[in-house]
Structure formats: C-alpha cells, structure tokens
Length: 106
Image 1 (spheres, one colour):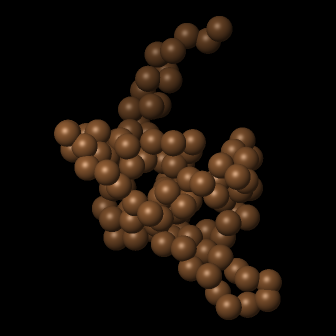
Image 2 (cartoon, one colour):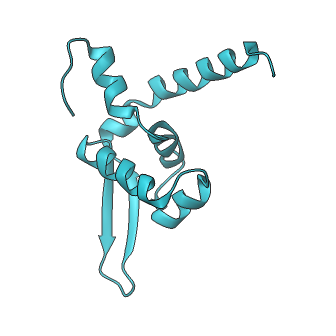
C-alpha cells in the first residue's frame, strides 16, 4: 500500500479496483474459499478476482491460507486491519444506497 498525500486517498487507493469493497464485505460474513467468492460475484472474471485478491493480500487487508490437501484448498479471511475498516465500508455502502435512490432510471 502506497502512502498518499491525504489519508483519504490512501484508504481509497487500497480498496479501489474491480469489486475489492465487495470482496471485503463478503469476507465480513466469514472465511470464504476462492470458488465461493467467484460464485458470489459472477460479473468478475476469475483473472480479475485473482488479481484483486492478491492486491488485498499485499495491502494487508486479507489473509490467504493454503491447506496441504489434494486438491489444494485455499481460504481467504480478513486481517485485523480488514476488520477495523468495516465501519468505513458500511458507511460507504449506506452512502451508495442513498445515492442510488436519487438516480433516475433511464
């Protein structure tokens, strides 16, 4: 995670990307396997899902655990940092609902 001039930018830069916020929100509900996340978000390609998960892990927001089984089982969960940003993401979620309610349908 790169530190920005403003802490707001640092936060936004760490969660911006194709559905990173949604991935984190799903992980608030508990540990998820890779295929579970893919099924929860059918509009994101597996390539993009993998990229976003790697970036979230690099930024310290999620953990990736590989179990030594055949076939290998991989689970994702939130780090303490990922848990700590929950109130901010919930606020953004509510703000998104508020904005969506004001957008006119085309």
